Image (cartoon, rainbow, N blue to C red):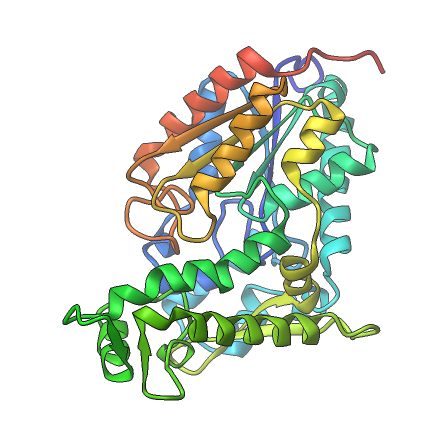
Length: 364
């Protein structure tokens, strides 16, 4: 059946956090996503609609025989347990962006070895930053996909999106802290608002606090200036020439350090000038952008306008928007994935797009 397969072959590409083929990661422990397998759910829905799907573990994720999820659920949650059952930290520390992209290419080439026709039927499906990796593969031209699909991914380059996140998004959010509507946001209002869930785009409330005790809405220039300075300082630190790529960690509320990604992934966020939309247009590859309108990780309205303009100018680019959904199409939060019940709807959007738009197979 694999040898004779002649339909779309969809390759799932995640952003780079050490997650397994089902879309689960140790970092999911703080979310309802912890008890779900979003990529498996979507894979099942796509297969049910006549598509083949390739999904794979991050190179540093230990195999199913190590029973990571069971080990964390039924034993002590500790860094040593994560290392033993879930993540090969030695491998993870060596997985930079380039290494990760090469591992994706290796998975695609393995699939092509099993499914000879797949080489002409590949559809790269990026999740959030995963589209950046898919575009890198597209630009290398070692693999020629018949289409690119994404959920929660920007059309423009990550550098510009990071600037929006650090500046415009923050300025747009600040008035939400003004509980009495007097046009002044005090640090006390910020502390109170943060405990009620406002401004959680920052990891803690200190990122919002004014050194003068308050921000005035009629003089937002000072706030913007402070944000621009912080952004420039962070960008400069990440831009140090010769900087060694090192593994970063996220600290769980219990105090346990969870291995995350190497610093090259953070540099990619702030430095990458690769625009997925521009690459699609230049290389003539059809693209589908899927967004939730409540997404606060990506400026959806701007990205959609860019894609629609490209389509009006002749590009084979489509946009699908879910009005009540967040970043990864969750109904609840930017920090969660879509619920299982939505997977068939996403799969149907993809199926119809590919019927209309996928490039016909080219002879090898």
